[in-house]
Length: 148
Image (cartoon, rainbow, N blue to C red; front, top):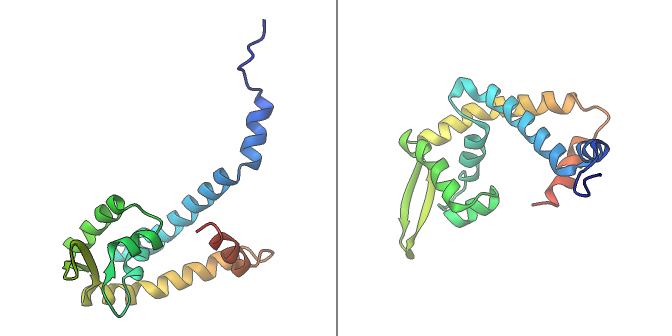
């Protein structure tokens, strides 16, 4: 007697070959590893680079806005900020307008590190773009933005 709940291996292969979520996750992990390796000399991960860059603004940032920009929940953002704060790269202060909220500021040390990291980031992007000559990288970025 056959099992009515059994899925065929062909179904597994179809999902493997067509699942947009799987392919985006795999690509994201591969690209993240490349940037992690490129930024390793600065003791910085790609996620830390993005977080620090999100704080490079004229006014302190609200945690909620940074979390939304980076598609993180606030708990994950808080955990990501701790090592950067310990390194003196980020300052976290009580928001004077709402004492329950926090404002995030990039320190001078954080700006110095970002200044050193930016050419590495630019070089890695140039290399990745060159590896996709048949794909317009800017068109890919634009299409991916629709998911944010």
